[in-house]
Amino acid sequence: AAGVIQSPRHLIKEKRETATLKCYPIPRHDTVYWYQQGPGQDPQFLISFYEKMQSDKGSIPDRFSAQQFSDYHSELNMSSLELGDSALYFCASSLLLTTSGPNNEQFFGPGTRLTVL
Amino acid sequence: AQSVTQLDSQVPVFEEAPVELRCNYSSSVSVYLFWYVQYPNQGLQLLLKYLSGSTLVKGINGFEAEFNKSQTSFHLRKPSVHISDTAEYFCAVSLYSSASKIIFGSGTRLSIRP
Image (tube, rainbow over all chains, first blue to last red; front, side):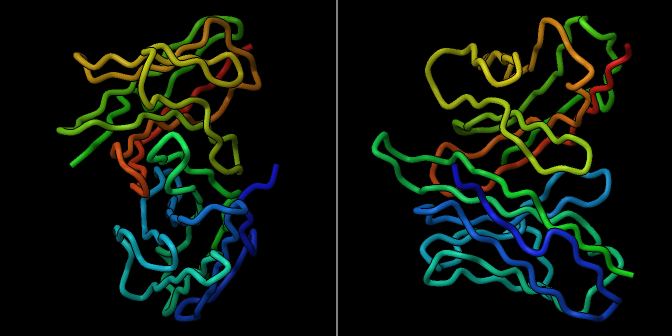
C-alpha cells in the first residue's frame, strides 16, 4: 500500500540558509500534519492543513511557513535556519471523514532529517 | 488541554520476559489513544490504537494495551519480548474529533538484554 512520502530524506544546511521540505500524502488523504522531533525528544506538532487551508497551528516558529497545494502535497519552508532547527521532521496524513464517521488515524512518513551546521 | 505522561524513560528487560510500558493521560474530553514505536534512526510506526469499544486492544508484533478510563491509563504490554523489540515507544492522544493534532508522551526506551 502507498505510504506517505517525504523528500528529501536528509538535508544539511548552514546557519541562516533556507530549506524546503516536501510531503506527499497517501492518495485520497486530505489532511496533512507536520511534526518536529528534536534529538532525544518526543515529536511536537507544528501545523496542519485540511483541503489546502490551515486547520491547526502548534509551536511553529515565525521563520517557518507551510502550505498545502491543490494535489494535497505540502511543503514546509524554513528560513534563517538556526542550529536548534536540527531535527527529524515528520509529515503525517489522514482522511478527515470516513464512512464510519470522524477519523483521526494519522499515517506518518519516514521523516526528513535536517542538520544545520 | 491534553497531556500524556510516560513515567518510565527507560525499561531494561531480559529477552523472553514480559514487559509493561506505562502511560497515563489527562484530558477533560474524550480522546483517541495510540502507541507508536520508533526503531533506531527510523520513523514512527503505529503499534495500536484505541478509538472506542473493547478496552483491550491488540496491535502488531504481539503487543496489546488496555484502556482504563477510571485510572486514565493506557499501558502497553507484551508477554514475551524479543531483541527486535528494542526501540523507543511513544504513547499519544488526540482529541475525539477529526484533524486533531497528536500529542506525544516523552517516550520510553525499551532495551532488551539477551
